[in-house]
Image 1 (cartoon, one colour):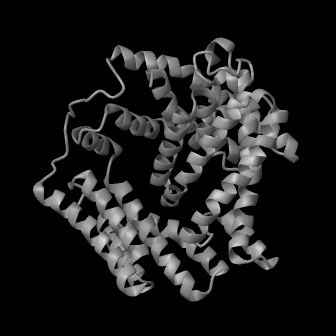
Image 2 (image 1 turned 90 degrees about the vertical axis):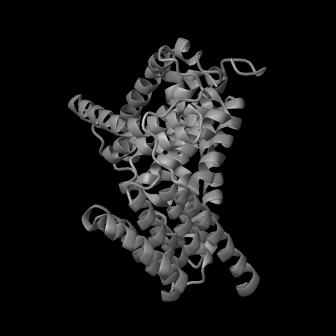
Image 3 (image 1 turned 180 degrees about the vertical axis):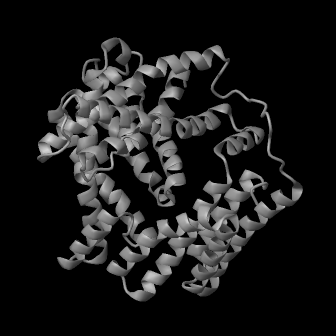
Length: 195
Length: 222
């Protein structure tokens, strides 16, 4: 791994954690805690993405210990983002947002068993309340837990993909070309391999 | 306790958390939660115990909302163990000391750099994000209104932050290369934490205790 990619990983992890300030400012119910993972994957491939996800979870755990079991979700997000980058789905918002919605379903399906077994579906206030709503609607415990995770992840991952697409398109071509996967992710490079 | 080797502190946290889940509820969870809270109280009631209790309190509330009382107690004690022990180790263990221990134990400089760089970058980026929020507000950006308007505001706030970080990547890479930073290289730690035979034995003992508890739970209790 080159030194540039090595520098990218902690920088991307820090982006995931620092974006909370922007989210707080607009008062939207979003986490954006996988933004760095998706960005690192789209720029540098799955290895950098998985490493970013693990580092993000490790650093986040020092702030809130309940984050560590969800490191699996970060790894799934990195692998999904890699497939999306390979397919050039970051080329426009029209392709990125549906891909993000798909990731929302996958992330909810991955986090539900962890949330159910480890935390009894009480990971955050918002998820606990939507889980309670699911229970009130007559869903079984695991179904209500998935409902809570789904409501939290569905929009969040779509916004994450849209944001990463905006970043990739706003990057100057020369800067993007320094990262092995960036041009392919936005559909500029050919399908033979990373640029 | 703060003078103990970082790996010993982490092993204690991992063992307490694992035992909270392995041992039968509620007695097992009660024991591990009491141990974790006692460690937190010994490290400083205001500095460690209160933050741990404040972090754990919402979980108890939400558990009561979603579960019956026995389940709430069982899951709540496990979560309290995990939260109190991690808050305890976070307060006692400076990241720099952990990095020194990792380097002394033979970990590559890469792993140590990833962890330390991310930890040190987060507060800097949060401060930068806040400056961007303030600057965009000065330029008339309104973060209120409908969903579409808020999402556009979010883009205007997040994009400068992310792009500025990506532009700095080359600069940082160059700075590291000029200092002879090579991924995978072994470094000599400046002040490695002392790792005595007693502490190494204690870590093995914790591992054996967890394994024995798991075997007992599987074999005799189902």
